[in-house]
Image (cartoon, rainbow, N blue to C red; front, side, top):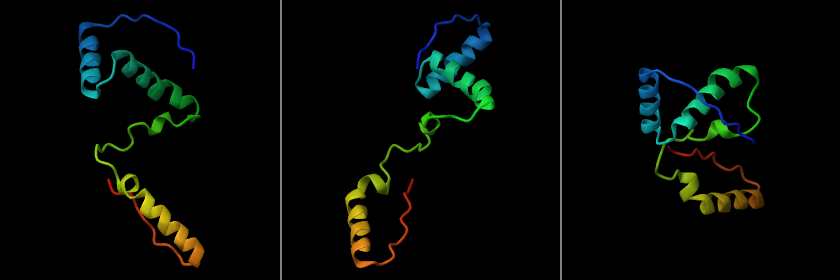
Length: 94
């Protein structure tokens, strides 16, 4: 994706609010502005065509059971296919 540079002028209150949002999220002020443009202007025009909306969807620092038990879960899936048994449904914990 090609990006174009732009310059905006903000009031002191707008600048302070943008800076607080950037500090809270740990991202840059430019990233906050891009996110707001995406959320309030572009998303109304058309549905997203990529998976960037999923970034940050899981707000846990600990790995889920899928991450920690993937080998066991894959093994159970393979055994279920070999034996023809119905496999239990596993749900990732948050």
